[in-house]
Image (cartoon, rainbow, N blue to C red; front, side, top):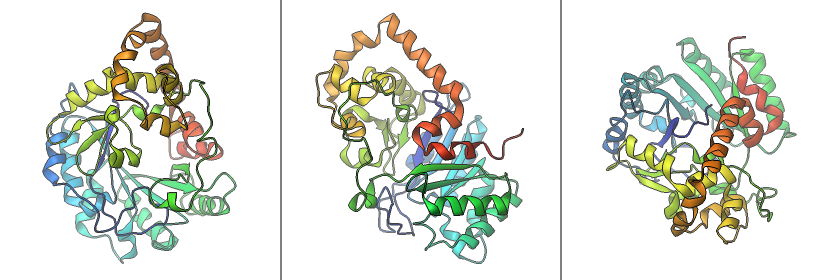
Length: 342
């Protein structure tokens, strides 16, 4: 898990999903939106050996509703040295065998990750998950689990993590995040603790490091699903149908406003611009795109650039476990290191 600016790119291949989990951050259904495959193949086709993301992360909705597209994108990315991962809700685990197109897609990627939690389990039983995950591991594909819980003391998390380790030992890394009030979960989940706090303290945002290509091809600087519904101009980087990776990478790196968000965080950036700062993500959403010019002089100071480099070095040096201690449930951050050579 890298924090390098432009070190990776995420693509949501579709907003469709055959599951109906109560916590879905995108409110996905089988009737949700989906862009033509050509938009995504064109964009990945702009990767070059001397200018490419290290990691291409494919998700949805449910990315494996488009297995041929997953296979094609992974193949194109591999030719220039980009590694590919895919995140799936494992809807196909409910069948007796993995469909051949999905097997071809799984074989094409470098890493397979599945999301699972108390909301998924009624739709994909635990024994089916373990059986399918084992079958994928038997094919020599690296796997991991992405879990969501309601806090460090969530009893479901403790029981499930124990079951994983009894079944697979230390072979399966796990990323554990807290439930967040986005999508369907917003209808019944209280706002995150501290979200409305009013503070000017610097709180750097690492989520603006990798561009995100949405289900319709829009490219954003942030993976918050609300961005693709609200479309705040300062977080939009372009469109996969018209812009290539070099252009998107350059915009990600050079935007004064994005650099300030990554360095100081949304609240402190808003304060510097004399804007409201009610909440962390909310403060970012509300920033005025015209304010970028007001930040250019500050962000171009030699001292600011030294500070930027120092913060990025600290983030890189901390690695995936440190990233998850900050952005996931800290108690479980060490599980991300399972499966690594000693």
